[in-house]
Length: 110
Image (cartoon, rainbow, N blue to C red; front, side, top):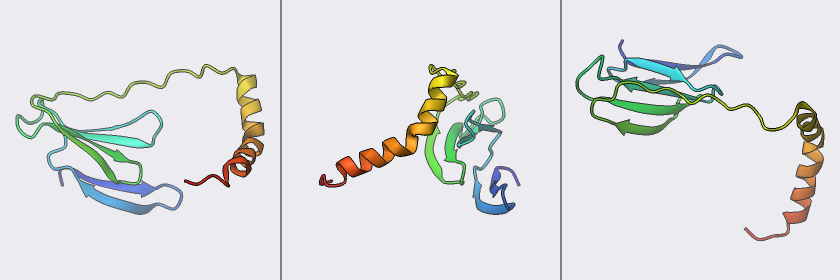
């Protein structure tokens, strides 16, 4: 069927969600693997041109209809501004900093 999507948990190969983007011509995962875009391009169909954004679990997040929409391309992830040494320090200290923040602000009203 045209436009039927299945979002699969690759750990145990179970289907998390089934969805449909009728007449979809393209499917593009973002560089992080957290989002996917489906689209109906003007090159494939002259009507109902749009792109839809989904999360990796299959939840529809956004619909954008656009006349004569042709193509969606994700912007590449820029390289980190931190050095490898700084990243290692951050990873090692993350939990202690998180615990400090939780203890410091746990008494504050929301």
